[in-house]
Amino acid sequence: MEYKLTYNKYKEALLDGKFLGLKCNKCGAYTVPPKKVCMECTSEDLDIAEIRKKGEIKTFTVIKVSPEGFDAPYIVAMVELDEGPWVMGNIIDVDPYKADMELIGKKVVIGSKEVNGDKFSAGDGVALTFALED
Ligand SMILES: [Zn+2]
Image (cartoon, rainbow, N blue to C red):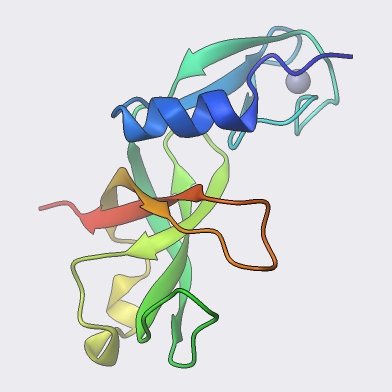
């Protein structure tokens, strides 16, 4: 079994401004971030697809005590992409101390930022960022 879209390719594309995922040729579902098989039907018949960078905030939490390498406070949110999958990232243009339930259901535009690896991770990575759309 091979990875159609490796994490490194996904990361490099994101930092280049391109949001890539996988589209299943069997059921049509999207898988983001990339995995070996379709998240819906486990088919391996996947093609790389460009994702639209739009979604809706479904839930969030405010981190006030952060792990090594991160500056608290910040907001971690789950966003449902227009294509269906839920992805995790940081809401970047809202004061974490003012974040409230009003954020749920808000539309966001998706971007990315590079994050430094720490002693627990496999090295530098990339995080999704969410900016409120208006
Ligand atoms: Zn599928």
